[in-house]
Length: 167
Image 1 (cartoon, rainbow, N blue to C red):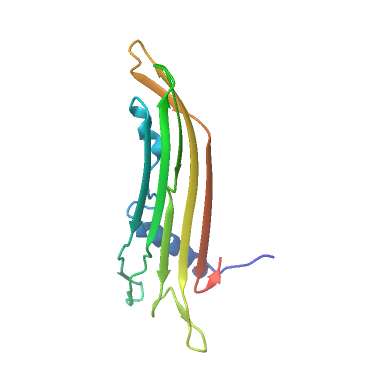
Image 2: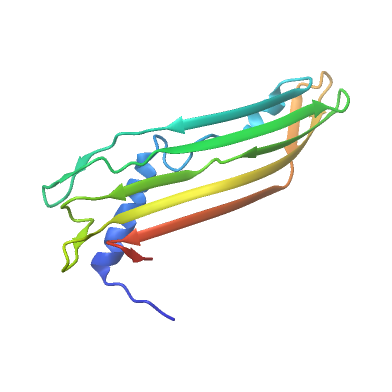
């Protein structure tokens, strides 16, 4: 089944995606990646959790106020890294590095009203799960140069609705 969009619908969808990424302070990046833990020596383990409750408002191109459109979200991460010997280290990490959660309500360009008076909201929800395995090798006469890499499995899920219509 094909679905066709007018230019204004595509423009609005792209604008919504852009606003969704602005709702998070640094675009879609929420937690960073865990590779910085490989710069330390020894064995480390960590667990992290966060809950964000942003308050973001704006004014549409039509001059109407847009009420708080950023939704609350939370994320989790954990990992462990250990040195096998003075040359090799291994680690495994889980985090939720990217996401966005926005919902536009009220009387503005990103909503529409049905004949029964109910409102069709524009929403964007993006979430990820990321599993990383890393192996590092210390090089150089004093092991002061490190090269690391490994497999990553990342799942991303996105739900976008433009005025209540699923895109």
